[in-house]
Length: 70
Image (cartoon, rainbow, N blue to C red; front, side, top):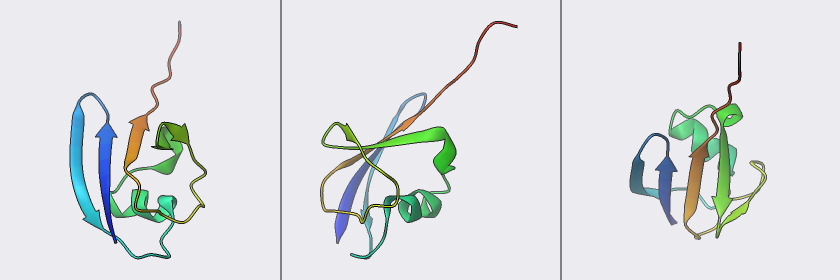
């Protein structure tokens, strides 16, 4: 199955990936060498749990930046 992935992290990177039908979003992140603790994954604009199985919908991966005053 093919999935279009858009990575939003200081810029925009798009790619189409061939994935297994039983793969989870967390496994997709690992294959992209992305730490799942620093991103939020969206499908059709809605955040999704990383343990869900992939669908053929487009995926947006947003890097979360935190910080504050010292």
